[in-house]
Image (tube, rainbow, N blue to C red; front, side, top):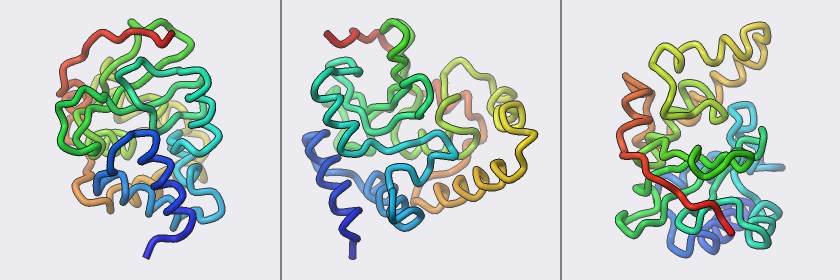
Length: 195
């Protein structure tokens, strides 16, 4: 049975995406509401992954950040960087849509497809954290991101490790053998900045 917070998040996400949610996104929302019932969108904040809440969706509706073919579902909390699903009509489920990273402070040429689907994206977040998810990182970069950014903060590293373990309980989410290969598995493309 879903909590009222989970039901509200599901309804908002369905309205934003315009289609039913897949099992992975439903599991992510359910996990967020269990980990942080008082503030589910920020359950994974230590991994720089914040699920969009009502206020975020209202802001996006008033002044788009994402290109017209991308629907946002999360942001990093840093520099306005966010993630969305590529709504290109090719996927049978929202979980199977490619994930795009949007850099609102940059031009559309910097936007990039960073995962073939939501499960792969969550696996990349479990390796490092959402702010550093990119096609440009090598496998060595992926493995050292946390230590470089937070090596002097053992309590935060422990919290990040715990949240990563929770993400890995979602069916199909796993730590990739080669994060760089996963981040580059889906062909990148050009995006048009929102009007």
